[in-house]
Length: 222
Ligand code: DC
Image (tube, rainbow, N blue to C red; front, side, top):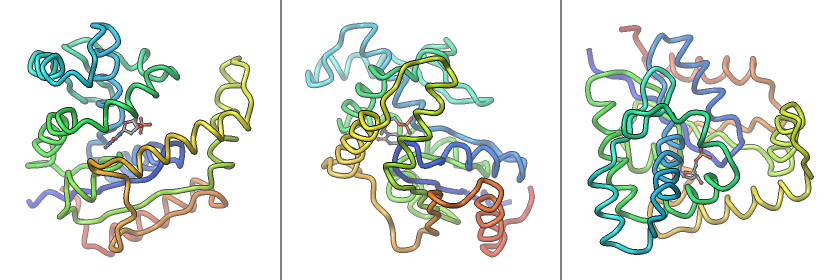
């Protein structure tokens, strides 16, 4: 059967991964978090003290680094690094290093191979534009920066971490700007994408909307 690729793009904190995971579960297909793959590379850059602006050092690192996403976890050189990639430092490093073409070339090739034979849901910034420009359906998931900052602050409070919503909002806006103004594969809202604004929409209604759109595109269970 022809694979059915579901591309979900949008800014940080809009709810892409929550939506992607639930859709994948409902349809019984794989979910790939491409942001986690960029974060794994960022972690390796930190660990090795490699400068991503040094083309030779970066090429050497990329040639000797293995990144995989399987079973809901990301692996760096065979080590599960789920618990190490959500820090502020890794977020910043992932945002900066993901702007470098060599990093993107490596991860996009891996991601395209993942969707060659299997149906899947993939979320990121360039899934509909670069990874699967011919995806069977594309979503653009967004929310206001205030709503996204408040959600992040709630998560941090729940984890017992101190936080300041205004500061978080500023960081989110700075990251949005970088992700959407970089020369290589900037975050773009494609005209063919189904837009879902989660600012005032609950998760249940969001998933219903997404599943309806997927079925209308002719999704058939494998
Ligand atoms: O979705 P996230 O916050 O985990 O992504 C981390 C960083 O990686 C983000 O700043 C943008 C980058 N990224 C990207 O450039 N392309 C993707 N497909 C996914 C993430």
